Image (cartoon, rainbow over all chains, first blue to last red):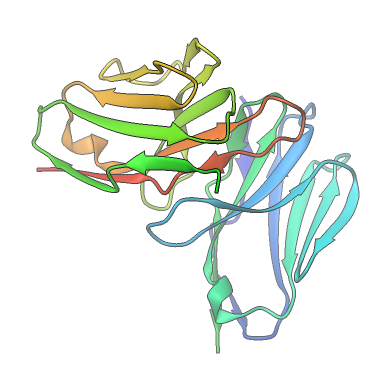
Length: 109
Length: 113
């Protein structure tokens, strides 16, 4: 069974710090990896996608992928209180993604 | 703007009373998905359509049905809602190409009285 594991948290960081969110997956055939942000009571919002090993940067966000270790992470630099949300990792082999249960991030002033 | 629209945003129904949730898209994506999400849990895939082909997840209760009359619209029917069906229902769309992300609607929050 395909599994995507995330620490449920909450991960608490001070404003301005780097938040590091991690995700491991079991399906070695996975080819696409996504990070979604979900505010309480809202739907998931895509913030990053990554397909190749290494780092991908977009503004304050950096996604890191290591397929050999079956590990994908999301770094948020200069964390803001508005970043407080649940971050869902999604892993996809075909067009059916598997979601982790998400990590709750709290950025405190 | 191209988007995924779910209606209604909030739905209250009585125990056992059928309810229909709707989803429409202007993205012209060929895959549409329905998810159920409960508090602090991952979205759970109920079923999806690849064009007109319906694909049901093995553990989706028979109580849940879906229709996709055309590319743009998809419906989730719950024939006899139970208290355990109270959840957020998410519709998503995507293309099938490698690396294509899903685009989510705002969701419908279903409450059962």
